Structures are given as C-alpha cells and as structure tokens.
Length: 164
Ligand code: ZN
Image (cartoon, rainbow, N blue to C red):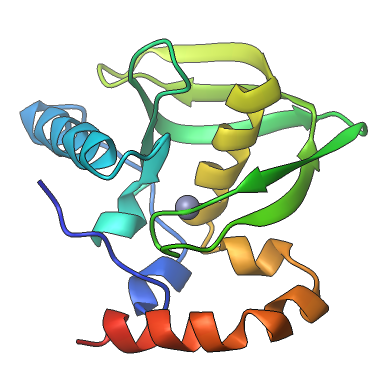
C-alpha cells in the first residue's frame, strides 16, 4: 500500500508525465493504487497522490476498479452540475464543486489499449477530479475564494501534517 500525499506536498502541484511503458511495473503500481484507494474508502486515486508524477489514475464508482492511463478529455458538456466532493489529499474537506455533466474521454487501459467513451453523472465527475490531479489542479482550486478563506484553518492544518 502507498502513503497518501496531502495538500502541501509539492508533488500534488506538478504536471504529471505520460506513461510510456505498459509492463509489469505499471501493473504493480496500479494494483497498489487500487489497494490504497479501497483502504481509504476513496472512489478515485491519482498517481501524484501517492508521490508518482505519472498520468495514471484508478477509480471505482460502483462497478469495480478501472485503471485509466494517459487520459484525455475530448469534449465536455456545457451543462454543469454541482455536487459535493472530497479528496484523499484533503482529509475531512467536502466541498460543492461545479463540473460538466458529461464528458467524452480517451485513455489507455493497463495493457495499452485505447478506449474512447462518454461518461456521465458520478463517473464523469470522478474522472474530471482525477484528471485535474494529473494537471496539478486540486479541489481547492475549484472552490470560490470565499470558501477557501473559510477553510483556511483546516487547510493550514493539512499542510502541517503533509510536512511531517
Ligand atoms: Zn483528489
């Protein structure tokens, strides 16, 4: 299992680099990420959150685990939806975030095959959240400045823990 990197850890702010080899190493990383996600009751976990600056994330929105490698978001609906989100890198922070209702995505599977599909509802939401991580974008960037101010104390506490 991996240790979760918390807000304040610089790896969370780096743009991740593409995955180029689809061998046993990648499989092991994905398995360990899935194990870590379940351990912490997450619905998604991106590689930077475990200190790996690569374009891979795992998610499970109720149909079993999916490994997403080198994702692209090809289309995003103009229609938005607000829903409460959490993030394993922000313990005990839950915020309403507005995101596209549906998206068209392209990504590679763990064995390197390319998949293109439309996602909607919760799957679209989790995909967009995890995709953000690969770009170094975090939950707090999706909040209003006013909300960030209100959460300042909580965020500072997380930063302190992240530096231990
Ligand atoms: Zn997150």
